[in-house]
Length: 236
Image 1 (cartoon, helix red, strand yellow):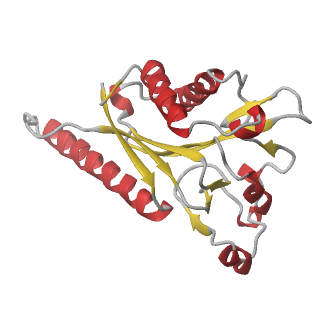
Image 2 (tube, rainbow, N blue to C red):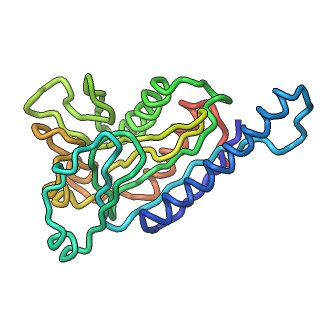
């Protein structure tokens, strides 16, 4: 399956969210037309769905998922304004997280019916993409039982720390939202929230773990390679 890749560069959260919605709604309209033709026993001659993979680097923003608790935002409105940090309640799964400079945010808008219509498989495969990517840098990562995302020392309670957060939305097997991998991220911003609603765990970055600034574009390229391998798709 072909997946159309776009690197949006530095782009604000809301306009990127709106763009994802446009891509999703276009695919949902196509699925509805296909279904209408099927019910009417007619041949569907319209366009097929398109899958996309977006990379973006957001300005500082906190986002709260559908299952999130607003009190996990620890900063006041005044503090957010003073630090030029935006805040949005979103329609993805998960709790609260931070996006900002030095973080690779990936938004797959995929038609899972063409790959594998299984949301649990999708999330685990997305995690595997991250695990394989950071392994190129000698960072050993895993999953934390009962939690999404990618963790280091997941089996050591007092050392477990998250390096990549995830939260998605699906409709008729079309996905949106995705993952946020901390590469050269300013981790101090995470002190203003209870990351992902988990109070007793820390957050880390590739830069912190390796003690040096990481080549951002290089990590993006490795992510694309691992995404193709794990999902069995072709990036164009």
